Length: 399
Ligand SMILES: Cc1cc2nc3c(=O)[nH]c(=O)nc-3n(C[C@H](O)[C@H](O)[C@H](O)COP(=O)(O)OP(=O)(O)OC[C@H]3O[C@@H](n4cnc5c(N)ncnc54)[C@H](O)[C@@H]3O)c2cc1C
Image (cartoon, rainbow, N blue to C red; front, top):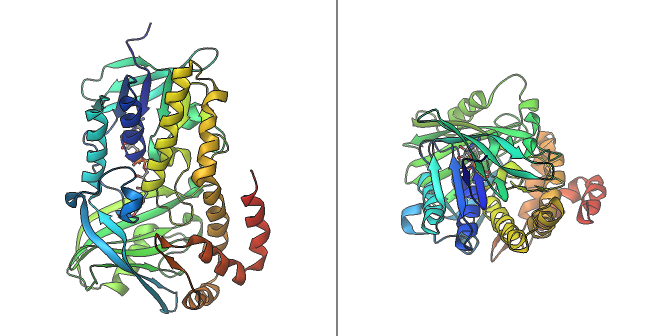
């Protein structure tokens, strides 16, 4: 006997979960959104970078209060200090991620979803054929209860375990998480409309270091490293090294430590009565680790499929499996390319990276109306490592 019943239950109120809940509620389905944290969006574990306005506004209005700074320029700095710089008005934004996540959850509530914070999902319910809802603990009162659902959406982010509970193969392994550390730095020299990426083993083995300006003189300064290449040091050790070089003597504010999934996409995103969305579904871009827009994109497709399946009265793995196909077509296949490219690129020695940065300077058409053209970057990679083509071409064909 279930304590409560909904048509859709969503685990986690990050961008993926809130957007999924908003869309299923907007379609008229009774929807419960469960978040284990006390305060949605807090603490922030993000560099807060996001793409151009057209991309973001497919999902929500990018109101002024959500924007910390507008980005018109970027620099990629090679291990030896060679700079590739480019300019494109409004190529991206640094957002206030706490407000951003809260806005998305408010939109879910306005659409009619019931949003509960401090409610942690502790397991999935199942019958013989499918998953049928969740077990929940109210962290405030300690009370446990069950909530039934025709479809449960696992949007529990980097800490996700719901895809594993649902038996989805390919859920990420610890080594497929880029380990990140970031300080909010005050009183540094920055161009407040420019983001910087710094490459090389000295600051960020297997990843990159970044400077994302929040306002004049203040920036999110961080590093993401591959723990297997870090030689016994951790992300904070590399961050200290980077700060010493990039902004010695600057003031330090909030420290953020966290991982981001840079794994290959899940072969299947659905089981009977269950779908995985956002970082929980390995939907981040495996090259950059960025996952906000991908989570929103995944949510749109997941919600659309869940609504169709519930209306048709068929929430089987086969029916919900349409979501996997939609995702592969929209972003999944591109992510597969990025995954191969990332494995090759981040394993390179510094001198090889040096050559790539030099080549970027001579690559026409790198900056398009919508931002950086990833295919041009892949082309530069392939020209440096021709063997990569044998992995990229099959990735373009169905997996
Ligand atoms: C240091 C760092 C910097 C980053 N910088 C960027 C960036 O600049 N741009 C970008 O696009 N991406 C960035 N990312 C990645 C981005 O933050 C994530 O990809 C994005 O948050 C994924 O959204 P999501 O909704 O899938 O997951 P999340 O935002 O992680 O949301 C998942 C939610 O589920 C909740 N939850 C987990 N388990 C349970 C449970 N059992 N019950 C209930 N609730 C649960 C969590 O508390 C959380 O609120 C960065 C990540 C890190 C670590």
